[in-house]
Image (cartoon, rainbow over all chains, first blue to last red; front, side):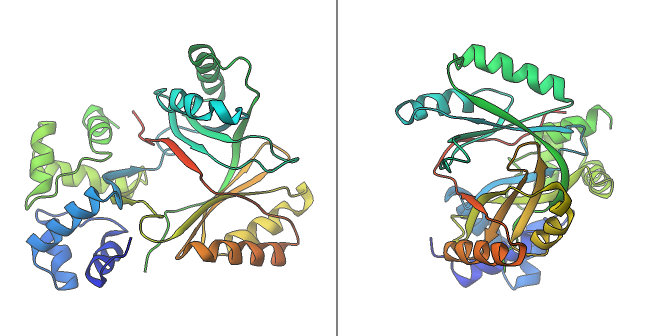
Length: 158
Length: 147
């Protein structure tokens, strides 16, 4: 994907947030020398192309009471990966579900899911429920709760 | 946080209108007025319940590199290594987790090729191995929170 200079300046201008005012796209345009209509068209296209995944509120889940955050990792036979990944990803309490490479012998897990909850017991209950509803009893898994959070920010673009 | 704040959070994690008067349009759907929506967003940002109101980008499609990395750090060295790792501007977030691989961070670089070189720099500075686990396939990315 090659972005034009105009797209790049728009991406950089709004990365920290949209102005909280009646005509935010006009305001963004003023700052980077673009008409409001052009800002609207470019943002719409960036959304269509999947470069902007979402536009709106980005929450701080910890501050909203989701203090238990578990990375649940699974060692799924490669031939079942699509099936299991699809099932896991459709569970409502799973917020992310990715395939990643194993790092043997240290790390045998190839499917990563994130589950957030208000406390650890609730997260463990979700996991039990998922194992049952997705039929994952035979698949080794590990629950890695987060401890301290050292740094949280989005990626930055120039 | 009252029921209006909760409705705002549940409805506006995505789907913000791209039009000339977007807050008014979003407020209409929520049954409040534009000024109230803006004021409540400002307050939730001030209270740091929201990290921002804006875009969530797909780093790879923007041409950047993105990876999840893990390290195994002895407890007595953990603070020092955490500081060293977090000092890299490419480290987006970093969590301690309860496993032998006990430090997990996301690396976001301007180009995919930079991932390997930043990892080498981190190994060099800290003296510990970094396990690089880039995404192979995405089954789901929702990351929306109901409140």
